[in-house]
Amino acid sequence: MNEDESQSDEAQYEHWMGKFEAECFQQLESEDNMEERLESERELAVQQLWITFQNSATAIAQLYKGRIFGQAIHFNNLCIPVLQRSLK
Image (cartoon, rainbow, N blue to C red):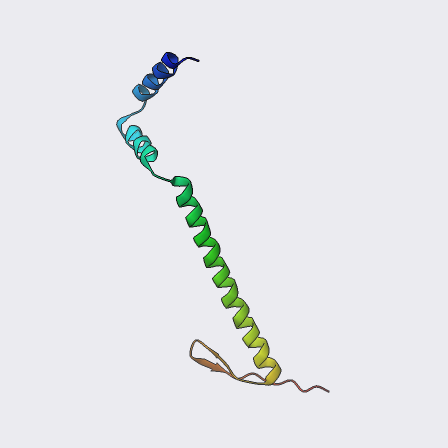
């Protein structure tokens, strides 16, 4: 396909598009660094997931520690006494 044919194809395509489609296409074409933006959003999602995982792991560790040592567990300003099991 030579350059003249590709230009005529573009002209036909632009003629086919409506005003709204042309505006959307133009806006998409003008977006700078879309790949970098997607990558940064992906990294942010991974960081948020990791923080959520760490918070959950910490809460589980505190529950386990309180159960073993018979301590009260403080969760969202609530004090929950933990019953100590007797080892018979």
